[in-house]
Image 1 (cartoon, rainbow, N blue to C red):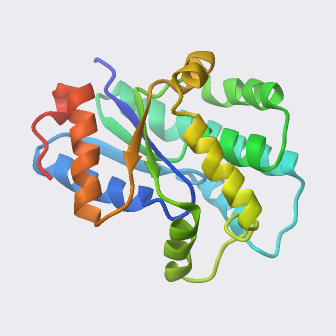
Image 2 (cartoon, one colour):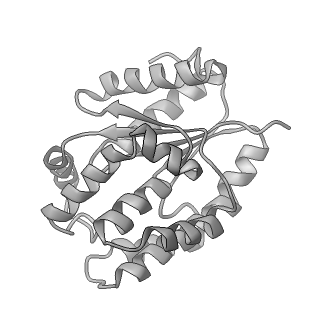
Length: 221
């Protein structure tokens, strides 16, 4: 059975990834396209336990510990959920993948990139996204959206300077030179994340339809 598409949604805090994945999954269901939506960290029993540790604001950990916990959750998610779904011909929508590791742990926390990339190769077993949609919103707007959801988690409480570095890193990832030197990330498309949920969804569906007429060309926003 042919492998279907692995679509990743990325962006800084409050970019709207979860909302857009939910809306897109609803449209895919209407179009009778089988889709599986997962998130990082989490999505498996081990991953959910790791998520609780990573996001608990009472926990303090080194940047290396943080990065390796994310990688461990990713390895489980790929092996248990993503790879089997792709093999069965499903579209897989992922809320965060390894661009977040490069933005948060390499640029944000200052970990050495080559060591992180090596760990990522182990976690992903060479799996490359077909397309990453990078939702772009100003850091302050994104954190404002996060605050509206409730108390900030450990990652959200990392400070304005940290989140500014992360936001700048995500924008750098769109540059052709960066993408060429990081083929493990696959193609990356910047999506304006400002405006209403439906306006952003129209941008998402337009980008997907242009890249992959099948199975996204018939999806309605």
